[in-house]
Structures are given as structure tokens and as C-alpha cells.
Length: 271
Image (cartoon, rainbow, N blue to C red; front, side, top):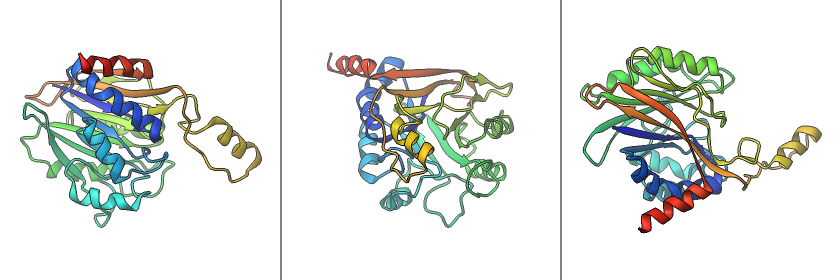
């Protein structure tokens, strides 16, 4: 079995490229399940119901979010009613959304998906380590493929979570910093790990925002808007190979999909 996980989708450029490229890439790379972090997809902060529906049509099977989860209030109805989108499991029980969901591949294989948010250099939240333990205890035992998006700032925090969950989950993939790390690996217990899968959006930018806007705010302290950039749009992600009977990973590799790749993939869908 093969899982594709996409790093933070940023703004319209990121959404457009994902929608153009992923259906073709699924077929070319024999992907069974696509999971994406979509917390930055609406103008760089939050997720709207309209964008959620568009990404679903683009064959994204499941969505994780992070600290911008509630920036668009109308996403709350989606979080409460849909079974393919999760909130960080260490958010309060009163917070809208589900701690975990189970999605199925076309062949009927089940994948449990959950996320947690870090505490180092982040807004206050409950202990992510205790929260993921509670979450794993709730997931049915027959669902052996289990995926965790750890949305955190500090690499040390992410690596510790990976080690904590080694042998308990199929993969721990970090998000939030928008910069792809080169530490993808398989831990001894069969858990695939990477500190950050990076960003699916405009890379000629400061983490997805226009360079000149961020520069002006930094140098002058003026309150200027951090508009989403538009150039050098790329999809960043990882492909994880999974043994479906055990839930152990057998491989993890980074991928980049450019606009030129997307054009080729779109053409392949017409063949």
C-alpha cells in the first residue's frame, strides 16, 4: 500500500497546483490514499468549505489542520459533520472537530488519521504525548495503518514524537514550518518519519508570503499584510510504502511536483 502526504497547502497557487497535479500523480505513482495538511489553503490562513470541496474533488482523501484551524468560522460545520478531516487531538474536547478518522482506499484498506500540535514555541495546548496515547487507544485494533501529522515548530519536539510513536503508528510526518527537511527515515519499530514535509505553494517567497511584504514589515515594523506569493509553485510531500497486514512502513521518500510536472500529469489524464 502507498500513502501520499502533502505538506501545508498555501493559498490559491497551492490549491490550484494540487488540483491540477494530484489526480494524475495518484495514477502514475500508484497511490492508494492521499492525505494533506490544508490549514493554509484559504488566502494563506485557514480552510473554507468551498476549498475543502474542491480539494475533495481533486482526490484528496483526508485532511489535517493545525494552529490556523478555526481562522474561517464556516469550516466548523465541516469539521463536525465530515469523516475525512481532523482537529489536533490535544485540543480541548469542546473544540469543534474529530480527534481521529478512518478513511478507506479503493481496495477497502483502512487508514486511521490523526494529528497533534506541538507546544514548543506554539500557543498553549494539552500534552501532545498523552493526547496521542488516548487517541491510539480509541482507534479500533483492526485498523493497523495509522498516520500522524505532528504540527509543531521545533525539530526536537517532532523527533521526540516520532520516537515516542515508533512501532505504534505507520508514520509520523511533521508540518508547520513550511521547509522540507532531509531526515526522512524508518525507525526501528517500522514507523516512517520526517521532521517536516514542507509546503505546497509558492516557493519564491518567505514561507509562502510575498518577499517584499515580509521584508517591509521586518525592516520598518509597519503593519503590512502578508499576501500570498505567486511564483515557483511546487508541491512538497512524501510517499510512504506500507505493509498493509502489519501497518509497518517499508519506505519513505520526499517528492516535489512542479508546475511543469502538473502540465504533464494533466495531459496524461487525457490520454
